[in-house]
Image (cartoon, rainbow, N blue to C red; front, side, top):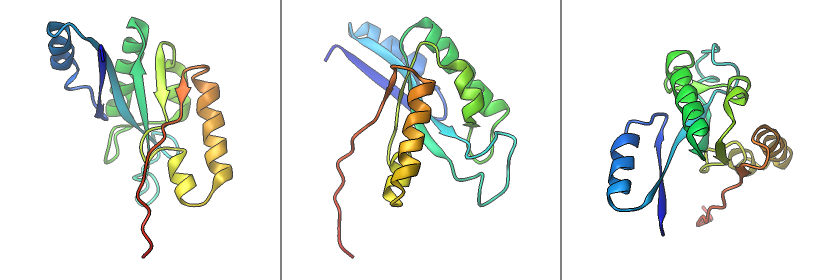
Length: 149
C-alpha cells in the first residue's frame, strides 16, 4: 500500500500529525472524517429523535475537498452540535466538491435501514447520496457474524 486514510469521528484532530507521519514515511495521506448526519435539520434538538444520527465517511480527494471537509466539520461543531457535531443533508450538499463519500459502518444511512428490514429506505438513502456526490459515493460492504438468539 502506498496510501492510507484517517477518519476521526466528528473531528479532524489527528489530521496534521497523521499527514506529517505519512509524508515522512514516503506515503500518501488521505485526510477524512466520519461525520454525523442530523436526522432532521441541524437546528432540531429534541431528545429521542435528534440524538440519533447516521454516520458517513468523507475523504478529501484534493485541496478543494480538504477545504470543504474543514467547512463541514466546523459547521457541524459550531451550528449542529447536539450530543455530537452533526450536519444536515442540505448543508452537506453545498460542500461536496472534491470529496469522496462512503456509506460508513452499521450506523450508516444505508446499513441502518437494511438492518431494520427497510430496503426501500436504504435504497432512497443510496440515491440521495449518490446524486449528492455524483460519481464519488461508494457503498461499504461489511462482513458480519450473524447469531441466532
